[in-house]
Image 1 (cartoon, one colour):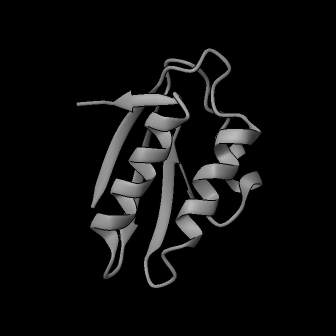
Image 2 (cartoon, rainbow, N blue to C red; image 1 turned 135 degrees about the vertical axis):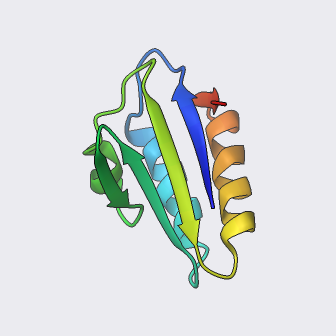
Length: 91
C-alpha cells in the first residue's frame, strides 16, 4: 500500500516532523515503512535516512507500507503529516 503527499511546509521536511514520522513508523514492528522521492527509496528507520531525501516545499513523497498492519501504518503516518502541517495528500 502507498500514499503520496505534496510537502507544503515552507521549510520542507526537517528534524522535528522527520522524528515524529520515524517514531510512528517504528511502532509498527511487523510492517516495513518506506519513503520514496527523487528516485530514492529509504526505510523509515532513522531520521537521517528520511532527511537524506532532502524534501523541500512543493516536492512529492510517497510513503509505502508492507506487512500485516500496512493500512494502519499508512493512516498513522498520514495523521502525523497532517498534524505537523507538513503536507497534504496528493492525488
